Image (cartoon, rainbow, N blue to C red; front, side, top):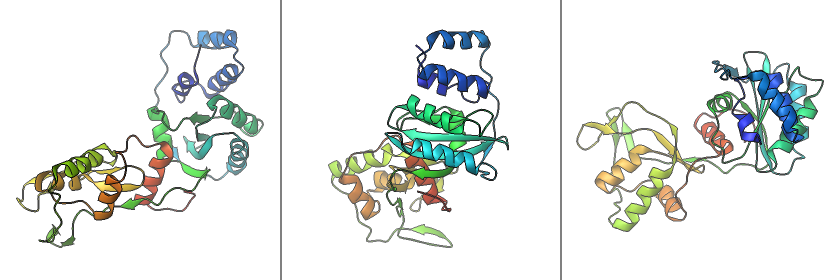
Length: 274
C-alpha cells in the first residue's frame, strides 16, 4: 500500500494535479485508482527540477485563510507555513502530530475552487524531509502555530572582544570535573547544526586557525562550536546559563521543522508568528 510519506517524497517531482489526485485516492484507500495513477507515470524516474521559493503573500491571502481555517480544526496540527514556488504557485506546509492524511484532505477541500491544484505538504514533527520541503521552508512565512514557542537564547562564548579579537577573562570558570565536562561536551555535540561556517577562527591562546565557528541548537539555546572547542581543549566553561540548561536535561537531537524555524527567526529576527 502506498504510504503518505511516499507521496510526500514526490512533491515537486511529479505534476501537481497528479499528486493531488493521488493523495485523494490514498485518503479514500482506493488502491486500484492509485495503481492506475502510478501506471500513468510508467517507469520514468521522477523529475528533479530546481524550484525557487519566495514568501510573496500578495494574491494568495484567501487561499492562506482557507487552509488555516481547515487545519486548525484538525487534531494534532501544530504549525502552518506558506511560500510561493516559481513566482505563481502557492505551497502550504503543515506540521502535525495527528493524522497526516486527514489533515491533507481537509486542506484540499478548503482550497477547492480557489486554486488550480492544491499544493499542501503535511508532515510529522520527526519526519526527515526531502530537499524540496526543506528549501520551501527556508523561504516560507509561518502563518500560524498552535502554541507559542519558547524564548530562543543565544549563548555567549567569550567574555569580551576588541578590535583585535575575542578574549577570555583570566578568571574564567573551568570545568575540572571529568564527568561534568563529558556531560557538557555530549550536550554541545548533540545539538543540530543550524548555521555552518567554512572558515576556522583563530585560537585565542595559540594563534592557530583551528576553532570551528558553526552554530548548533537544541531548540531552546543556540551556541557556537567554539564553546565545545574551548571546553574540550582548555576546560573553559560554556555560558553559565547554557551549562545549567545542559546539565539539567538530556542532549537534544534533530529539531522539528517548527523548532528549526524559531531558531532561525531568533538568529535573523523578522516580523511574524512564532
